[in-house]
Every structure is written in C-alpha cells, then in structure tokens.
Image (cartoon, rainbow, N blue to C red; front, side):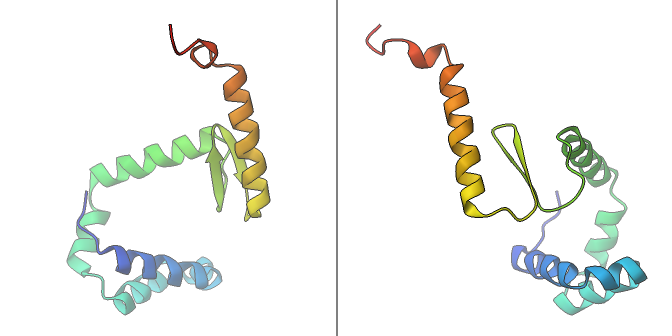
Length: 116
C-alpha cells in the first residue's frame, strides 16, 4: 500500500512499545517524536493517515481480530486456536500438536489410500 522501510518500521514499533505508558499519557506528540527519531518521511506519514484505503484495511483487520476474541497484544492464532499473551514455546507446541491431531481426525482426504 505504502512503500515503507521495513527496518524503520521495526524500529518505530520497538520504540512505541518501549514508550507505551508515555504514549498512553500523551498520545500523538509521542508518536510524532518517535517518527522523527526513526527518520520517517512526514509527507508519507500524512499521506498514509489520510488514506481511506489504509483506514479500510486497518478496520477490517481489527474486526477480524475481534471475531477471534483478540482484545490486545500479543495474541496468536494457530489453526483456529487463540493463544493469549507471551506464552512459552511449550504452549505453542502443545497447541500445534492439538490442532494437528484434530485436523487429522477430521480429514476425509487424509484417510484415503494414496494408491486410489
């Protein structure tokens, strides 16, 4: 949609999360400060903020997240199963095994003889 520098976007996200409390208290001035620090192009930011297409995309993403019961971050969706919070690796492995077992049991194609 907009040509963004991935490294800059990653640094912006890192800075925003590290200043979450400050952002919650002061809002847009904190965003503006971070954008300036990471070297974002103000004209491109203004263009993105004014874009109806981008607003529609974000709105659809929010609605989809809400349909899965997501209310914050981090949240993960693995095979239709949501994992809330910063779960340990073992929790992801457990859910992946559970989803694979569930899918294998419900798969008509999986039980067919491959020679047929």
